[in-house]
Image (cartoon, rainbow, N blue to C red):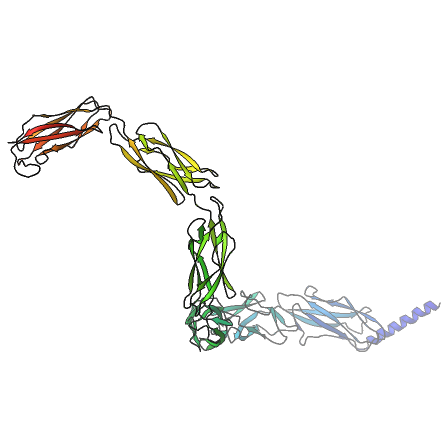
Length: 628
């Protein structure tokens, strides 16, 4: 019974509350000034009742087009409150569209009509233009970009993306927002670093169309921003390097000279320098010349000027120092047992006073003096370098030869070679018979070698057949070779030949004799036809007759006048007798003027004698009477 009474009481109160709510009409308003909103933005809506409600009351919310505007299906007004707000989320539209939002009570009252409000959702606008003021700037300068829409931005404003194909250089904001009630927005943009004039494009896509603007960026004038030099420059030493730095990379090929000036003539430098395209710095070589070793250090300022820019740097010029410049050895190697080689130490400049250079070798096989003195006014001194202690054929050693002076040193590598082989003797037979049996020669070294030794063999008569080289094995001192005599025909005169054997820098020689085999045929006679006597200017035919047929290949007989030379001549001098033949002919001619051999007085008669020779055989004569 009590529960029923409570329910009836609550229902009466609720009706009273509704009745109270319906007392005054409700209103629905949006937080947009003109009821318009940019598509995609969220609007705040507020429902307000005429009087506060005594208890919680639920309201329904509906939209005429849920596809482009979304609202919550229900909101509640708290006890003793008269309003409640909720969001209206909008979506993109293809054209400007208006929706109606309606708020009603769950328990309708015919006395209070529902609250409604109209909201216009605007289609995304288009960008009218993108422009820069100024439209031309230098690298590092700032310009103002202005983006303008084709209409005034509604509630929520319009966010526009910005992009550029040169985004790596051009630092654009990702987006800009045109505020509600405005048609444009500005943004700042800094000209990027460029080395030559360059146009940058900025594009703003919106509403299906992209508008773009161009900005011309010029490089700043090339200028020197800094210069550095080494702390010290020593006179008469190689140039050292300084650096000139530019404010930007050089564009293209920069041809304007950079003027360099120094306040001390002792400092020498590149008079003018050029920079390649793309570089941001430049090397400058500086040196000092002609400053004496005893001169005190001097501070020198070097100034670099390019156009209206100028930078300076200082360095300390120090007088030249006497230091070791180098050490060398003739041929870079020495051979044990051979005469010493010449070594040299050199200074960077002539020394004002005599200096002593210490010498040292890394191994005992390379022998050098302990020191060498360079005289005053000189820069070079020589010393002797020799090798020792290696047996023949030993491996080559590498030694380090060091020269030291005043805490500085210079070194060079010197090869130490083992002694060269030394020829002790050459033994060969003294005589040979051409075509006879082979004989043996022998070479002997003064000392056995740890390596094989190649001995070269030569002869002056090529008819001695022998090898050009022989090898004496490691550990041995002798080597043999075969000599085969050839090349002399039968009956030829004996030949002498020199046989030489060489190893290292030494050689041995021997003189030998080669004899020909005795002839198998001889000259039997020399006859004439007609036999004479011959008058002046007459000719007769001479015949050489052999003791037998000429051998294969034939033979040659040498003929010549041995008496009556002044009035008799023969031709040819060499009479060829072919193989198998026994005779050969030649012509004898007399002159018209017969003269004696000695006095040169005319003679009325005499004998002309002709000698024929074959090999080593004694000549055979034939004589003919000549005269008037």
